[in-house]
Length: 272
Image (cartoon, rainbow, N blue to C red; front, side):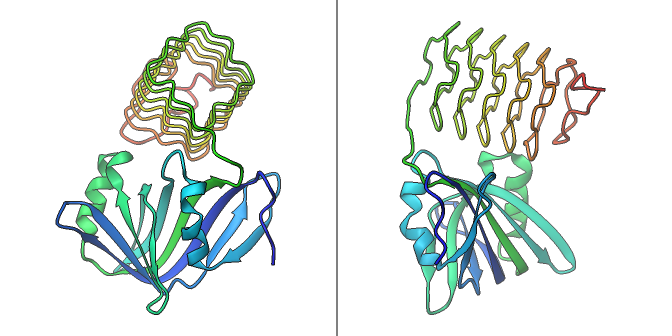
């Protein structure tokens, strides 16, 4: 049986026959998917290895995979003739082997108002042809670092491993974070004015309301990063990887506010 390489980053996918979103008495939502009997896993580049697990195996390792924060997930499905896509924070699932029923709590509010409204509107409706995708988990021990509101202005943190660190509202203005590992980091409201993040890894980081004005983000990996309401005025984003980044009311490098959830255009990024 194929095993994930040590230290690799895993992503997960599954197909379900049908599904339904239910609202509990406390107001939270659960998604129930039926017909899932296996979970496909595959490694992020550069390994490119894949395999199949039973749902119970993913559940048994959930805490070790997502120790620092719950993963983001996406579900694609049909409602009648329309296909929808919902992105949300996913919590540890439960599995009924006999009924092949895979269920989990979801939190759409962590992403944006659109996702919350969409989940609310789909409550109780039949979902067909369901595809589930769960973002990456590390097979290495998670690094947990709490630097909430830390004063690190001008700090030399080049090549530092801060994966999963909580840097929310920290002062990192003018800090040197070039080549740093900040994957899945929490940087909500963080002051990064004039900071160097050249070639840094910020995959899946949360930069909600972060101030990145005049920051060096050249060759920075910002894929699947939350940039909602972030300030990027004057930031340098040449050759940055913005694949799957989440935009909403983001102030673009040229000083304009992007419209709704649309990404900043090449002109707004000063790349045109």
